[in-house]
Length: 141
Length: 92
Image (cartoon, rainbow over all chains, first blue to last red; front, top):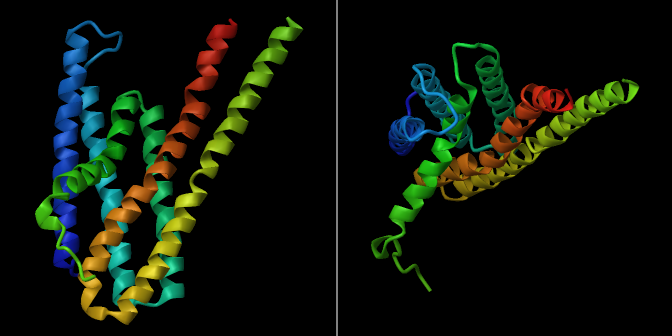
């Protein structure tokens, strides 16, 4: 399936946001550890953070693919059911990912769980940056 | 001794019930996103030329709507995997 340019653009934005967020998370974690915070820092943290960010991006990618498929069909009932099915599978995937992070000792589950919210943070930042006078086209009254 | 077992049992039951309640938060985004998508389908059907804009806006909106579901999910998993051990340590 060919990705629409708009969808591709948002995927790139979210991917960039996730990457930046991961770097900030790992740097902040390392800094807090160096300053004497009561949690450890090891190779598990960056590894888990990268995996978490990738899982978050994959979740967003799944959402994007579903919405694009739905928009191509433009059938209300089918779109609704497609969205619910997609949401179920994506949540299941995230759940399995988080459970694996909890159970496998080679990962740090906190560092893996925090990046799951990076796409949302990226969207908030994007909206904050886009809310410029140029964005308010005035509209038709 | 009996009270300790009872306390642990109540703690575990509380964690399990709490996790179940937290996972209810996953229902809301599913319903909300389904409704948003249905409305977007109508919009695209009325104005097919706006398909790109509608898809892009809906994509970001749906991603935001999923936040509560993820919060609930993480909370539920915390209650299942982390909280029982913590409370058991507290109870001794």
